[in-house]
Structures are given as C-alpha cells and as structure tokens.
Image (cartoon, rainbow, N blue to C red; front, side, top):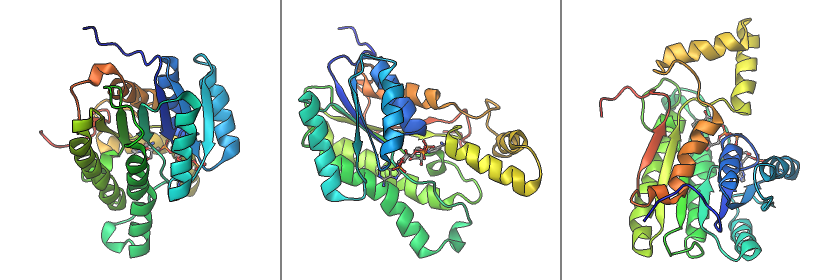
Length: 268
Ligand SMILES: NC(=O)c1ccc[n+]([C@@H]2O[C@H](COP(=O)([O-])OP(=O)(O)OC[C@H]3O[C@@H](n4cnc5c(N)ncnc54)[C@H](OP(=O)(O)O)[C@@H]3O)[C@@H](O)[C@H]2O)c1
C-alpha cells in the first residue's frame, strides 16, 4: 500500500477559511485535489478567498457564511457542504478571534469566558455536529488549530494558553471517541505566524513606540527565542494540515503538532 498526499475525491470544510491560516490550509487542500468549502461570517472576505483558492485547483470551491457560535448555522453549513459534494471527509477548525494580551490574573472573567466560548466551544460545536456526517472509511479527519500558547510559558498570553490548552484536551478526547469509527482527530499549534492580524498589530505597536514594524517583528523573534530566527509563514502551517488531512497520517491520532520554528523551551 502506497500512502500519498493527494486528496482527490475528498471534501473539506475549513472554518475561518476566509483569511490567514485557514485560507492557506484551504488552498493547500484544494491544490491536492480536495473540494473545499470555506466558512466565516464575512461574505466579501469569503468571496475573495473562494477566487484565490479556486485558482490553484479544479475550482470546486464554495463559501458558507455562518457563525461557529450558532448551533443552527453550524448544522446548516455542514449539511450544505455534504449535499454539495455528497460527502464530507475533512473538517478543519480554525475560526477564532484575536485573543486578549494581558497578565492572566488581571484578565476579566468576561474576557476569559468570551475567549473560551469563541474558540474552544466553537470548535467543539463544529466537531460534534460534523462527526456523524464525516466519512468512516478511513478518510475522515478533524484538525483543530490550537496555538503555541498551550505549550510554552510566555508573559501576557495566559488567556490564549487557557483557551488553546482546552483545544489540545478537546483534540485528545475527540480522538479517543472517534477512533472506533475510523475518524482521526489531531491538532496543530502554530507558533508566531505572519498573517494580516499580526501585520496590523505590528503596525499599531510600531506607531506607539515610534519604531518600524520590522523592528517590532524582529524584537519578538529575539524576545521569544524562536530558534529558527524568524516568523512562520501561513503555508508552513498549511503543510502540517496537509499531512494530517492526507493518508500520510493514517496512524496518527490525538496529537497536537507544534509548528513553531522551535519556540518551545521544554526538553520533551
Ligand atoms: N497567526 C498566528 O500567529 C497564530 C498563532 C497561534 C494560533 N493561531 C490560531 O490560528 C487561527 C487563525 O488565526 P489567523 O492568524 O489566521 O487569524 P485570522 O486571519 O483572523 O483568521 C480567523 C478567521 O476566523 C473567522 N472567524 C472568527 N470568528 C468566527 C466565528 N465566530 N464564526 C466563523 N468564523 C469566524 C474570521 O472571519 P470573520 O471575522 O469574517 O468571521 C477569520 O477569517 C486562530 O484559531 C488562532 O488562534 C494563529
């Protein structure tokens, strides 16, 4: 048996696929032959993403406007995707807002519970609704995008740590429960990866400190001790998603893969 990276004949749904990491993952999956649906709340953004993704493959791309925090919208979105191609193989959970930056002990309860609801509970809602629909013949995958905050102690990202740590736990448990059905559930924890939200943050910090955005970016690489000495690129996170979505990962489940340029400080 030869295991390959191609995804011909499979259908994927990428939440948060209208921008950033979700968009890069949707492009990577489509380039390998998958029909891809991208989900988000902003139609204009999804329309632009749809055109960009379609250009790298056979054009079987569609967008679904939905909020992952609404039960009915999620159920309807999954139904639309399954009816569109007659099957659903891969679900990537990537939809989440920018998380608060502050000392955890000073974060308002509302901020913590809002962040948990927006990301972890949203991922759970999508996974729970998707599991009964996902193909059981070996192609079924759920991939949860967590974040490096779940693994390393870095000042001021405690809210993200709580939220992403819960995503790692969600991934482990869903993997155990889905394994008897032949569905693999894994996660990815991206490190510092340059998406538009970060470009905007860098520009704002640069303005406030009267330095350049490049200085802000390079300073963070140094402060965080990123071993590869640079920020990640969205396509580098997408490469990990492609591995986890394809047959190449057929004996991997319950794992969260850190794709962070060596940011972690732990020995194991
Ligand atoms: N970039 C990094 O360095 C980094 C590092 C670690 C982890 N991550 C994680 O990676 C994921 C993507 O981050 P990103 O940098 O690519 O950010 P991004 O470009 O802002 O992508 C997030 C996407 O999610 C959508 N979204 C947000 N809330 C939603 C909701 N309630 N329902 C449906 N869609 C929703 C947004 O579109 P709408 O607003 O139009 O709905 C947006 O397209 C997040 O889970 C983030 O925590 C990123």
